[in-house]
Image (cartoon, rainbow, N blue to C red; front, top):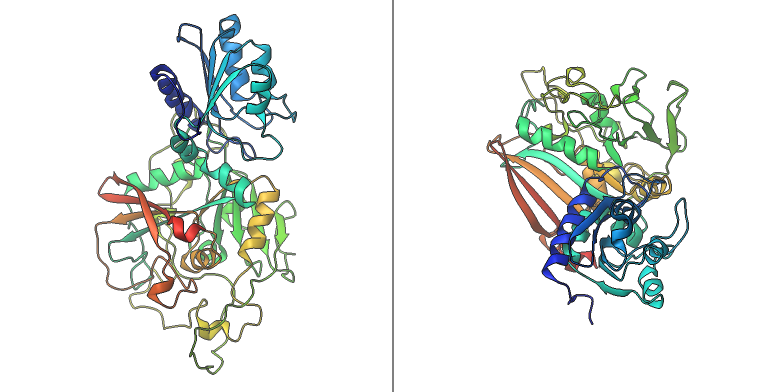
Length: 453
């Protein structure tokens, strides 16, 4: 029987939907492990146990569900979102636990692609357990996309988030961006942060806005790793990302002077990205005036800021209160009445032509470093230049745009130089979801299948 055409009862299908919902409860809390949910049905098809994997090192979903079911699991069915694991790590193999519990049938949604843990279905079949795979696979994959991407590609899943007006501006010509997105959109951004293992921003955003990058307003949220891409180590000692609300990692160049940073700040050294070749036919220009090289300086989207509602009562101690966050990050020049003098874009071909090591730190090396640290999901909140670098590197797996019903006509665009010079090179996306948040639209899209290959 083909996995895409599983044989399952209506009861098993309902149980799988419940298991998928259970798995989503642990988004952002299980890295480097997947999110998994499990429901146990007795011989009559009644739910007798359920569970989900809550954190790395803790019991897996099947174990939680089997404990809840007790003796009623014998002869019953286990419905689980991911093929039961077949290896011993910090916990034992789930396939063996199901066999020992006397489960007669296992229905899973997605086969485990991890070489270390796969093979659970074969072990179960060898023990005489009936196994069916592929039930609601697309729905289960959507919830577990970060972990699945990390296994299949060897790097974290990257979701780029921005907020803009309908004409694509993330700030006005004077640099002001308060408020482009609604309070409802900003609250949803905190949900995205809570579901990510790391939040990444550039030094331009840091210097302009002093963002906090921690989760607020979500009780018991596990704080993501805050990552600042800061090639020349310009992060000031008093930056809010250096507080104790969440862990922070500063990514700097190989030769950056980090002596001014606090001793307890973790620093990783990343090489510069190779210089991208200029577009065909581009003449070699005269060297531009000296400018800040490497890091983005354009204003960041308003959607990267914080909701104004206070945290709910009972929130975890690591979740900072809303009062700690200012109303909105202010982009450079926001207090000026006239736009600042034009400057050479740091991501432009003209600027890059005189920068032997290219523009910014190498995205692939940075993601490899994060993956080695157990990071499986990244929320990219940097400005246009950093976003352009990730797009140019082919390292954006999902785009979430908060579109406000407003027009500016001038000002910074959401995406900087991404190495795209013709319409034929455009990164085409498939829209997977459109939702309303207050007056805003949230559009979620992923690269088309043709460009994923």
